[in-house]
Length: 62
Image 1 (spheres, rainbow, N blue to C red):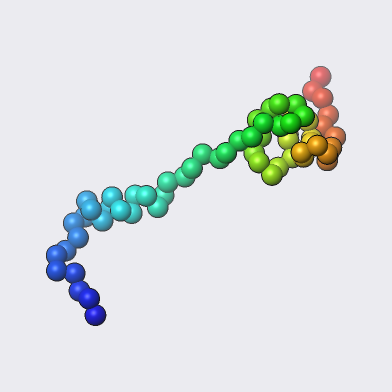
Image 2 (cartoon, one colour):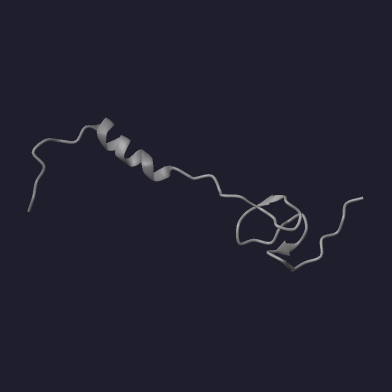
């Protein structure tokens, strides 16, 4: 069984482990109907369309 010759320092160990907690920002796409930004593969929250199909009715404010 392989055994390391030198001990890994705390700084080197922690630098390697620091990459595991990174969170990427969610990608956003433009709605083809209303041109607002929304998350991909989700219904547009401003107009209720998914691609070119109307999925839900959005009530206007006011």
